[in-house]
Structures are given as C-alpha cells and as structure tokens.
Image (cartoon, rainbow over the protein chains, first blue to last red):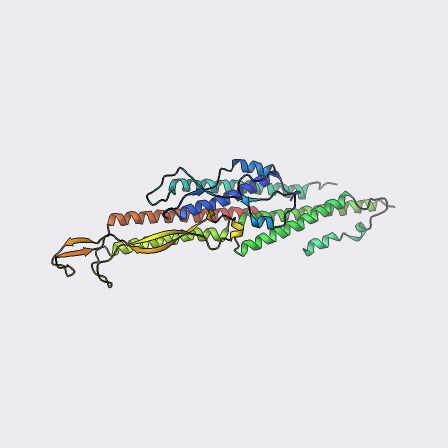
Length: 141
Length: 97
Length: 144
C-alpha cells in the first residue's frame, strides 16, 4: 500500500476502526442497561493512537488480531492491533449491580458517531486528492 | 490472478523489443512491476474483505469499502504508469531514422 | 462496523424490553384477578434480563475478547414471591373462611415505573440502531 497510502489516510482509517469498535461497545452498554450486574465498558482514550498510525508506528492499545495476521500483509507493514474494551470505574451503581448511565452512553453515542462521520469525510477528500493526482498529473507532454 | 491485470503484463510488441540505444530494463519497468503487484494485491484484499462482509462473517463495512477504494486507486495508478511508459517508448521509437 | 452483528445486538435489546413491557401490561390487566386456572389469585410476573454473546459475531474477526460486545435476552419470566395482598371482603365468592380475599401483589405505580423504564430503554436502543445505520451510510458514501 505504500504507493497510494498517505499518513493522513492511515490515521483516518485508524480513527474509523476505533470509532466503529467503540460504537459496538456503547451499543452493548445500551442493550444491557437493565441487566442486573452488568458493568459499563469502554475503550481507552485514543488521542495518541491517531498520531501513531499516521507516523507508521504500532498501535498503542490492543491485542493482535488473528484475522489480520492471516491476511497476506507485506512484511514492512506493522501488524494491526484489534482494540479492546475494559470495564470502567467511577460510575454510580444501582442496587442490582448495574452501573450503566443513560446520559453517559447517549452522549458518547452521538459524539462517537460524529467522530466517525468527520473521519469518513476527510477520508473521502484524501481519495479524491489521490485520484486527481493519478489521473491528471503530468498530462502535458 | 486477475486476468485483466495479467494481460497488462504483456506490453505492446514495439515496446517489448526495445529500439536500439534504449536501455532494456530499468526504472520504468521496475515501477510498472511494482504498481502491477500492488494493484493485484489490493484487488485480492478488497475481494476477500467484501466476501467476508457479505458472508456475514463479521467483517467491518468501512474496512471493506476502504479496501475497495484503495484497489481502485492502485489500478488507476498502474494504468497511468503503463500508459506513460508506452507513450514514452513510442516517442523514442519515432525518433529513429 | 460489523453490519449484521450490530443490528442483531440492538435488536435483542428491543425484543427484551418489549417483552418486559408485555409483562407489565399483563400485570396491570390482572391486577384484580382473584382466581386463576391454577388456583389462587394471579401472581405478579417479572422478567429476568441476562447478557448473552451475539451469535453472529465471528470470534476470529471480533478479536479474542468475548466481552467486547454483548446482547441481552430475557432469561426467565418468574413470579413475584411476595405474599398476596389480603383484603377483608366477606361477601366475595373467593373469600376464605375468615372472609379475606387474596389479591395479586400488583401496585400500579410500580408497574408504571417499570413500563417507563422499558419504554426509555427501547428508545435508547432504537437510537443505537439509527446510529449504526448512519455510520454504514457514511461508509458507503466513501465510494462516491
């Protein structure tokens, strides 16, 4: 992917991967809002992840994903780490052991969706830029 | 092996037999080879991701779509490189007397 | 995002909350039922929610950790174990020897609160489905 990858694209793709994963976790929290004993889960803050991805470094958080290792990747590409979720602390617990907060999950649902949308829009821009560079570059001569 | 890409490995006859005075191998062909390999790899990756997505095997929608876009870009790049090489060789061979 | 699994996950919550609402409706409808085919007054019903793995998620692609996503299901519908409410009504056909009639332990306020909780949870999960669909649409727009 080296000829048509830009650092920004790598970072954006990582943002989209993490946002999609976080959406899954948030939806699980919402589905279990009335399940006795269920603990809220979330991913760790991913501010540093994007920069790492853009600079071609390894993902900071996560565990190796079996499927990514089995897909034939060129050897110079860093192994892609699947994000993980953790139970989070500091939330108010109800008598039945459930600590899911409606406000927190609703807010995160909206914020996460927005982050995904923004990344997708910038990604689209990168694709258009590359398409222009490929098809219009050097058309003279 | 994608048949359309395989066909592109076979350049037109007048380019394959390089005119006298032109270096036979070199950077042009290396770059073309690189782009062809990349395009093939990208197409394969995109195909497998889309298949996994549609099979309900738990693939991510956005990953498959990004893979398809990258395959498309790789293919376009390869076509452009090939066209430029053919163009350059034709110009050079027209200079022969 | 994982297309099929996500919709199934939120769908499981919609299904479970709807079952909860149905149980509330049954309780309210039978709040005054003093005789049942099984004998005795109607017993208040409650649902027991339980987290479950989403069947469609492929473990290999979703990562090794199983807790990353969990759907929900109604594990059981159980009867309230509290004793029935006894009211003194000697003329009632179902009165016992001392003139007390056993009524279901259904409190309308308790039931309405439960119903409101079910409705709110239903709406939350419906908005999660909307968010999923929105993100898929955003992904598809990358192809333009």
